Image 1: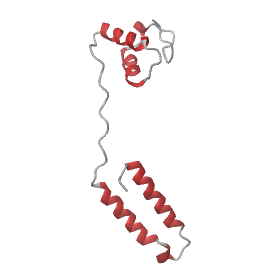
Image 2: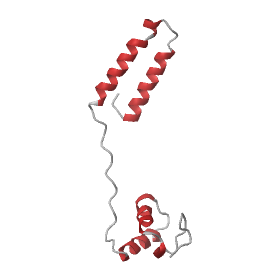
Image 3: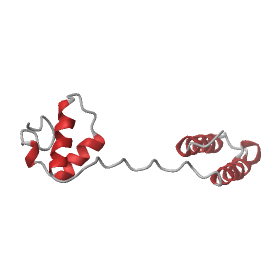
Image 4: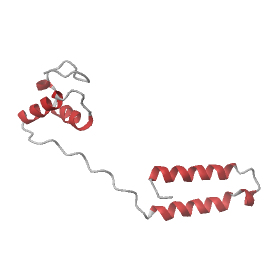
Length: 110
């Protein structure tokens, strides 16, 4: 069987580097059910007996960061609140947007 796509399109699976075959199994959703079986068989022929397990998921964010983010937000709100600065509130809008984005990126509880 030949590779139907990708970097080695048209190359026999037996001639495709092992590293690339492993990468395909770990990263590609196959529409052709025969291709992953052929890749597995080729890797077995080369001496690999099992598919490498995927890397573990990253750990959840440390809950010690939550108080730090909230403290940063309070400090900035106290410093740049329109009632204190007398400005039009653009700085506070930016701080609020930054805080919301941090909460979203770090997947913190609100």
